[in-house]
Image (cartoon, rainbow, N blue to C red; front, top):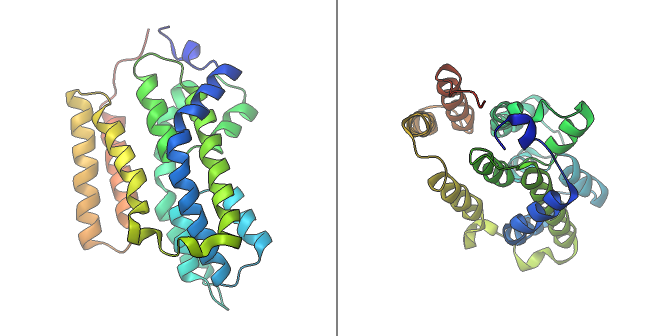
Length: 236
């Protein structure tokens, strides 16, 4: 298997395998969703709106950020800017997946991307670069994470007092540690090292000197720019 088109095949068995691979991490996602459900209910959102937000937005950090801005008068523009800043990395994630997704029909392509998150994207990219089919990890793993995020949100509406503050017990670090493990286990060449170094250094400088959440955009764009300028050789 040595072409993007061959790697872009998606079969039911691949989806199920991807679901199982992301299942262990999904339990932590459910706990974080539980905390979100409770926090959203305490802010006065209706049950329907809470569930709808988790189903359609599917972005834990930005959903918590939105709650911090929530009130009688919702500041719409700051809310949009904050959400975009936190989720801007998805622009780069989509671009990095394009060589494989371009071979799919539009409906399937965008349907898969609805379930893209940091964890299943990282695992899929690692497998893609090994020459393996990984759309199953992207789609099936995304389904696992989304399903448990929804389950956690629902549980938070009714049993959320069990975990009122996920940050106090380190649940916010689980995904970060997982992504770090994926990075360390991924490709080890000069190009990858420089991209990660530039992205990490840029993000840290932005974290210290620029407005809140801007480090996400700066890190993603700087790393993505280096990757775009320093293209790897095409697969034959």
